[in-house]
Length: 175
Image (cartoon, rainbow, N blue to C red):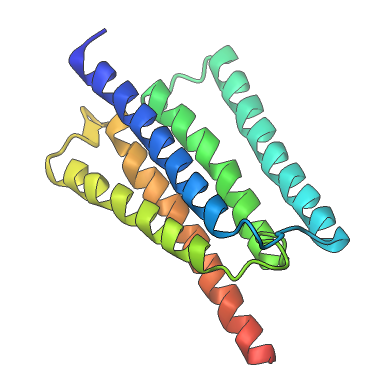
């Protein structure tokens, strides 16, 4: 295991630890507020899960067909970067669908914590993503590398933030 791989694993573990700490902080703040979903929201969340899962299965099937066939063309993406992309597309689809159908947050949630958490995640990923673009490590020898993961995550959170913003604006216009 080289130093880069070890650093990458430590980074993932640090992000998971920070996520748990943030979750515990928000849980303590909202101890008295019951946050839940009504029947319609649960139905729409189920549809969002199905859409995300179906997207992942289609991606996986395409990848399997590609690896079994001899098309004479290599995908210019490292396997780890391809796996990141394949995981984040269905997550983004789930979140955007849930936002569009008012099923992303519970009926008592204000959304402020989501905005701040997603803005923080966007900023913490866009900075290293831009740095990877600037130092040229995102594409090496014409191949998209694992260094693209931060940029991919930033795009995911940016898309979710955009969906939240548009939905919030639409809801305010309806009132």
